[in-house]
Amino acid sequence: MTLDDIDLTDLDLFANGFPHQLFTFLRKVAPVWFHPPTAHTPGGEGFWVLSAYADIQDAAADTVAFSSVSGGARDGGGTLIEDLPLGFAAGVLLNMTDDPHHKHVRKLVTAHVSPRALAAMENELRQRTAAILDTVAERGHCDFLTAVAAELPLQTAARLLGVPQEDRRQLFQWSTATLDYDDRDLGMHSAKAMAASAAMFEYAGRLIAEKRRQPADDMLSAVTHGMVEGRDGRLEPLTDLELQMFFSLLVHAASETTRNSIAVGLAALIEHPAAWRAVQTDRALLPTAVEEMLRWASSTPYNRRTATRDVVRGGQTIRAGDKISLWWASANRDDAVFAYPFRFDIRRQPNPHLAFGNGAHFCLGANLARIEMRLVFDALLDRFDEIALAGPIEWTRSNKHTGVRHMLVALRPKI
Image 1 (cartoon, rainbow, N blue to C red):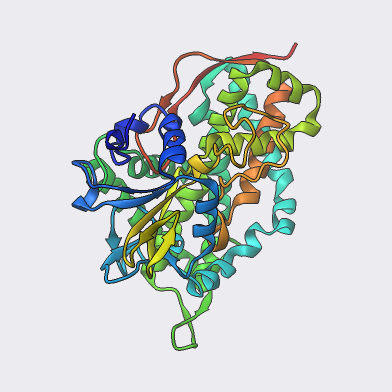
Image 2: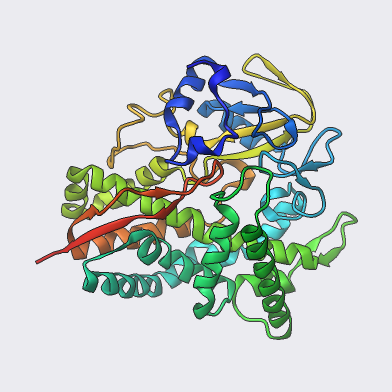
């Protein structure tokens, strides 16, 4: 393999999961590498690739030099490799904003995912988990992704956002259609994805209007009625576009990443039956097992930043306005940080993975995701003596989400 062979914008490289061997090569040969434009690269513009843990951690923490909005003379930005319009996505979508605005908006909803709020919700989530698994146990087989891994996060997201539970599967279909590149390439739009995005936008508009008329104890009501400090220092409400984008982000984030971590985590336990038996015998291992599943799955492979000024990293000069991609999934296999990084080790401690990012944009729902995963696996270990794959895993085609479309399993209940 040479650097000339690598094209991270060719989504076929990601059609069977994350290409770890390629990033092992990059960490050794060119941990800070300028990816030249290829036939697949949006806008015909190259970008920097950071693949080593230390470089990624430092860049994510330095939000002054590396912006989630834009930088230099660039008229677009955001956290995808392709430029998104300033004032539409970049600078508006919560994960594509910088402090202080990012901090102010985030503060509106942190109470809903605080340790106290999550503790109060845990028993309800446990009951929901039991009902989900009771249903699949009766059949003895299922598509684990749609029937289990996606179901608890969807139900939880609906509860947090104030969405009627009967609408959650429609949200799942819209989210999947917009995030899976099964019928398009980077920077391109398909009729299916555009229709799903438009339908979600319309749905969010109706729901936001309802929350304005009749607020409830949910995150969407909190941001709809919340006030944040504007550029002139005065308090002001979020714009309609910000509210729409917030809804879309929370639907994607609350369901997509957790469901994939659950699915890939189970696949790892199936592949390592001794680990399954160990956690089943000693539930005290479950918290560290969950952390290892998060590291192993690395469901969000990368996020992009834009340099706001000239910066030297790894002996390379990154210019103001350059795109920089931070490959979390690569950091989580860096042998400079993780001993035997390709060993699935449910006892791994410490485990400073970057599955939830780092710095100001550390995942708002990290603790919720951990609870959901713990509840699902605790219930699986209680009910089933063995779970086996009933066919090959079908992966999504995306370099932004290491996702699973379908995962057929056979379930052998405990006797």
